[in-house]
Length: 118
Picture 1 (cartoon, rainbow, N blue to C red):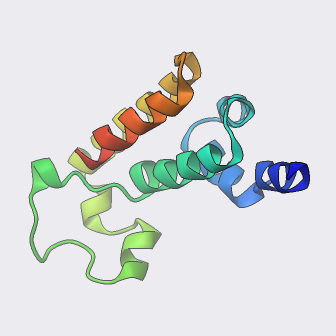
Picture 2: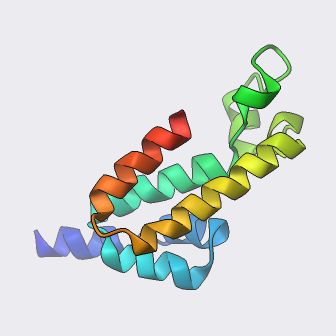
């Protein structure tokens, strides 16, 4: 059990994603506060919301968004890079950083997830 817990804490790819979205210091502080599964979820949410997030609410839905999974994952499509989506990604980064102040991290992570899927 302990070995699996320590292994899960050493997820360099996940830490790199979170550090790229926020700041390495903030990412390390969040990692220390999280259980391994929470940290994986946090990193996945950070990657989704900060690196490839599209603000569908303001730019709408339709055929002008990425049409393949790889195009979406690369996060370089005009839907991802437009001003509205960039603003949403910035707001997501701020909400992620605010997790440091949360008393109940698990509850805050759930609320963040719900805010992101809107």
